[in-house]
Structures are given as structure tokens and as C-alpha cells.
Length: 494
Ligand SMILES: [Fe+2]
Image (cartoon, rainbow, N blue to C red; front, side, top):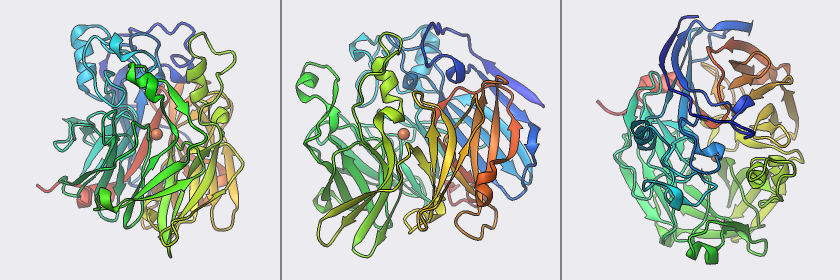
């Protein structure tokens, strides 16, 4: 396999007994370009065209104090498919924080679990004083990959094929960009939000297909909140105010202690996509916290929203975790939080909300065919977690119309990524395409790219290709169609 090592950074990690600095969470410190990936199983289909991008967390200098895996420096991995040809490359995201630490030769920022006052430099984001690792999420908008950090960093752009660094978007607002901005493929628009510790506590914005910030409005909240994801329909954006937030009294003393307030409702802000704060309609629902949404769409007088309801947004500490990591391990365990596929319906005429659990299994990190975003859709794909660990070892495909579902379980020692849906070239219907994922294989100490044919979901992977190194596990990913990139739907003019 032609495999050029572009850079290898020195290892400053002392893993000790840290559960998220070893095994499938062993940080990767090299950057490579690779072509001619070794085929391990099946064949490479010729009817898949585009790039799979995934953001992972790899600490070059682990944070001051206790390390949380979300502190790790963002690394973008790209695998491209076209005419049966596959190539792979990966790059650290050239954040200001990583640049400063490399220059200083030491760690400069405290981690998420520590007092930001420990940091040796001013930082970024809603948490205050931490490093913007740009390591949470990635989308492709206006022809560029955009990586984001869930505590609201500045956002970084890279070429989606070469992974060349292209810096911070010129429109990045003062309060930053949260992870989970959305690209509406039908308009080419990017919808985003941010949140902070100062009033109005949240903003919502739109960047058009030509990369111009065309809308940026406050979404006033009663206080600082910790939203993680947003949703959108054809005419509305949906933002949220869940009763899980920093204790307001302790926050006055500079202490960031998250509490769940079960007597308060969940609140949903439904705002016209180009509307202002005066246009927001608030809906109330059962108290919970939701990390991730699936699709949302309008149906008659109602807005339908699918996502993952948490039964226990503030889980009990994890028994048996290394000292100091009991809470971290709990919050990384979907079985502790009880995450279930759930549907909310907001009636715009009556102002009422109705809700329904769609599956009793513990599921999260959902994906669907984004060409069906904002439309009544039929198929959703969720990841299955390894109990106790922020690792995936399977997927469930739901037919939301018939109620049927199919599950894939990976072999022991193989851990998957979030798996976006790649429509087949000239796809005929909604599930005509592939799920694309990386696997970290603890048995071989290598990683792989896997394709699952959605029409033959239960058959498991139809193609396995070996990567030149072992990826560290991470969080989010996306699929961008090659035709969309080349045709300029997602491209900047000029
Ligand atoms: Fe997320």
C-alpha cells in the first residue's frame, strides 16, 4: 500500500490507568497519505462517490489536570471513493491552541473536568478558558470541511479532499460555533448555533451557500445552558433549553457543576429559518436531555422531531472507574443515561407537544439519508454502544413506517465509528446506498474502512479495506457527495 508519512508528532502521553488513553482510545500521532488500501473482504463498489470525514480526539499534550477524551486535539480522517478507487489521509486540525502548545513545547490548557483557572493562557468557548480543540464534529459546506468543538470554538476549515488547512471562517461570530451545525443539501445553507455564559445565552445563524453570513439572531434563554445539537425543517430551525445546566449559584463562584432539574420541562424553540427572537414559539415537553437529533419535518399542523431521549440525564457515578474518573465514565455511558429513540410532535395550531418512545433499546448517534432531511423519511440508523464504554460495536436500521428493525453486531474487539449514509450513485430510493464507517480492530491493531449496503443491511459489511494505522476512537463524522463537491453546490464562487 503506497503510504507516505507526512508528519509524526512526539508522544507526551502517560496513559497510566486512564481508561480513555489506551485500547481503542490510544491517541494517534502520525499523519499519512495512503492509496491502494488493502482489500480484506468483499469488493469496492463502483457506485459510491464522495468522501467520508471523521473527527477524532488525539492529545498531543494531554490537558492540565485530569484528561477527558473530549480535550484531545482534533484530527480529521478522510477516505474518498470514486470509480472503485479509494484513498485515505489524516491530519491534525491546525488549531491556534495546538499551535501554541507545539511552540511552547508543553500543555497550556486545563481540561473540561478541571477549573479553567488552571489554564496558563486565555482560552475559548462556553466553558471558559479551555482549548478550542475543534475535535467534535465535521460538516462540508461551501466546498470546505468545517470542524467544530462542542463548547463553541471558532470552527476550522480544511479542503475536504486534500485536508489542506484553510483556517477559521471569516464569519465565525464572537461567541463561536457549537458542534452540530447543519448543512441543508437542498439550499446549500449552513444553520448553526452557539451558547455562552452571558445573556442572551444563545444565538442562531445562517450562512448561505456562497459562504456569506446572512442571518444571526439572539435566542434569549433564562440563563446559561448546555445545548448540544439543533434540528431544522423546511421552514423552521429548532433549538432547545433542557433542564440540565450549570448550578447557577455555584457558577457565580466560578464553579461549573452540572445539575438536572427534573421539575422543569424541556423547552423547544421553533424559529422561522430567517426569523428573529420575536418569532420564536416555545414548546414544552417531558424533562430530559438530548445529545443528538435525527431528522425533523413538517406534517400538517405539526412539526415532527426524532432524537434520543435520556431517561437519566444525570447518571450515578460509575462503579469501578479509576479514582477521579467515576463521573466522566458515567457520562460517556449511554446505558447509564438510558438513551432511547424518541419522537416529539409540536402542534403549531394548539401549541401542544406529544411524545412517543420508538424503541426500548439503548441507541444514539443516529444517521439518515440527508437527501430526505426536512421530508417525511422512513429509514434511520443508530449506533449500538458497548455497555460502560464510549465505543460502538453495532448498528440498528429502523423502518419508521413499518416499525421493523435490523441489527448488526460487530465481532469482539472491533469498534465502529458514527456511520453516515452515502447514497448510491443514481440512487432510486431512500435506503439505496451505503453506511460508511471506520473500525478500530483491537485484534489486529489496525483500523479499517467498512461499507454496509443498506438494502442488505443484515448481511453486514460488503467491503472491508485496511488503513495504514490504528485510529483513536472519536465522535462525529459526515459524508459529502463527490458530485456535490465537483458540481459546486457546496463550492465557493471563484
Ligand atoms: Fe455530538
